[in-house]
Image (cartoon, rainbow, N blue to C red; front, side):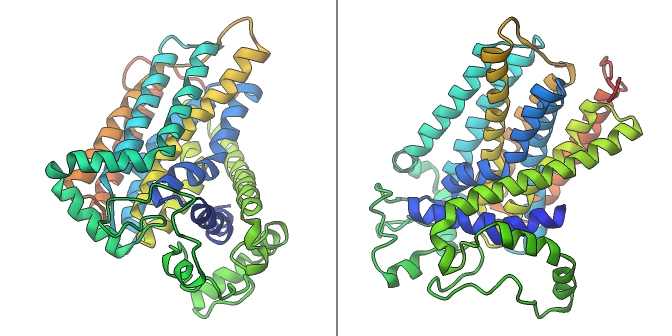
Length: 423
């Protein structure tokens, strides 16, 4: 299942995301915070609906909050440790996404504090996400204003972004006066002016230097020995995906990129569902409490697409897209909680609120807000780059958080009664 998710992301999901970004004139960070976050977070949406309507437990809540911590610390650690390229980061996208997620996490903390979710509380989550999308729509103008306003006191950020722009040009960042000013018009950004300009400006996540040349077939055997062995083992998965998803990297299917995006997101959800199903059976057999399952194994399982997608783009040097996916997918996860809660309280069970087990989740939400601040501070102290040093720090902090969470949920720390799956 891990291998299948990796193939879907690398061969279909990320190429379709690249074409969407080109057509809409999106920068790396906006594309990572919207389409990439929504597609890779599809498993969390499925988990939230299962928790609200099928299992009727708090496993959806604990999974999303637990995977949020994993996204912030675990995936940041993976991007730093598994990437051979030092990725530069921009100030505004990270600040924007961290602020949005802090507000979302604080809202969830306020909602679950009384262990009851009312319809107007779930509607407020949808409103927060709507405001976040609105900010992204005017991201260019807001970015211009902030950079002009605070550039005298943010010289270190300006220098980092200049270096980053030299190494990894962004789609839609074409103003000749400086790398910090983006085009005001997305439809008039000049991406599709002519063939030559198009090939020069296109930022490829997969090393496609010439768009005009057709991409090699997925059944082409790699030259390296280890890659050949892996290719043979994954051949059934490659064949199944080839028959069900149009490959938008090839000229014939290029205009089907939205179909590729939607079907690949559906495949990601289906594969992750099987992965989570197996993990749940193992946890029930071993008698692990469901809250502990949600905070650890299920959290890592449902975040496999986020991990794979973020590491893949970080290895190409696209740090802004990786970090915006990490934090932006968490903001989307808050929407995942809001949708099933709102549907259940407003249309299905209008007589009363939804009951959730909030004792351990309150601790998680508080830790989550602290971890958001830590990520922003760590990136700032690290010189606005993702490297192995930042990855090591994030990994250590994530392990500490996981151990403390498990001890708290098991009742070893604090006074928190446990619930075991099936009881």
